[in-house]
Amino acid sequence: MIAQTWRALPPGWPRRGWRDRLGVALSNPALVRPVFSVLRRFAPVLRVGRRVIVSNHADVVEVLRRDTDFTIAEVNGARMARWSGTFILGTDRGEVYERESGVLQRAASVDDLERVRAIVVGAAAPLLETAQPTGRLDVVNGLARVVATRVVGDYFGTPGPDDGSTMRWMRALFDGVFLDDSPRAREAASLAVAEQRPYMEHLIATTRAARAAGEPVPDTVLSRLVAMGEDEPWLDDDAVRRCVNGLMVGALETTSKTVTHVVDELLRHPEALAAARRVALDGDLDTVRGYAWEALRFRPHGILLVRHCARDTTLGRRATQVPAGTRVMVSTISAMFDEAAFPQAGRLRPDRPDDRYVHFGHGLHACFGRHINAVQVTELVAAVVRLPGLRRAEGAEGRISYDGPFPDRLIVEFDPPGAAVPGPLAKAEASR
Image (tube, rainbow, N blue to C red; front, side):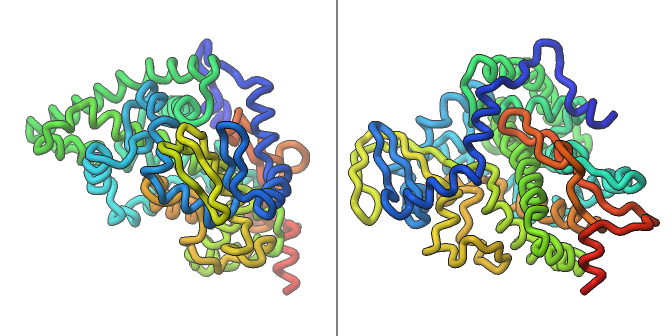
């Protein structure tokens, strides 16, 4: 019933086609990593016509750091404005960026991380309890995507009419803003906007009216922004809507995909899985995060970031010419297999410095929710790896099923309470 609810689509909601499946196949790390290993050695800044591909760690970080030379508005700005509203992830350095990022940092403060942790743990517990009798769990729609939706509802303050609606809206808007400008994606995003925008406008207006009447309102990112608007004339209802929307769009599917890919990759590394389980049971969440970021390095939630070259410049040790107007594609997966930054890159090592990773970008446009994601991902991965005898389900169920670029199912099995025969991981641990 739960899975049917979250996969349900309204009438006319477009299904995925062969282009989406091809895109997932071509982003498979097993296919792209060997290609990028060649590029890092022979052409770390490869120029092909009006496109440049950047593959080593130092050059990737340089592109992301040089945010006035390599800009983002030309990449994300128009589509973000069309579907979600102008937001800092589609805005370059300047007065608007500084003003809005400052407000958002106050509204979604790093001081809230323990509150976010409590929401994640509280939302995950009944889902895991429901899975206990069968010893089966859908990592996507039975845990990660559901918990991320609850964070959007309880912390950001936008629960939606129901979980399923929020999931549909955020998947379509993320796709339309960041990934796909096809007719199918535009139709899906249009349907999402038609449903979601009136909901958001009503929620904001209701919150503002309650505050004006002196009535109590929940302490959420949305209600904080509404309160700030009383002293910031530019922060009207529409500005609140697009700021919250921008946070939501990046919060749900990124978290779900990250957790799913981490679990999938740990299942490919049994020794790392057993070690991650031990530290999770010991409550060592910092080391769990180390295993998560390493597993994600092997199977990231995205392999490229795109920037626009704003002026003629050079890039890299070889001073490769990059003309104005060039699309610059930086490969984050390649950067994180560069031996110069990740010694013994083929090994899954949880002791690497956090600041080497570029999972969530770098510089001005590093993912705004990266601190929240660090809490969510760590807690959810820890919850899964603590399950005794964790293993893949047999056959296709035990492999990630995708809806376009988004994971839509990954079934794992574990030993339910009172199981007579422990799973292979539990056997391995018992023999130590």
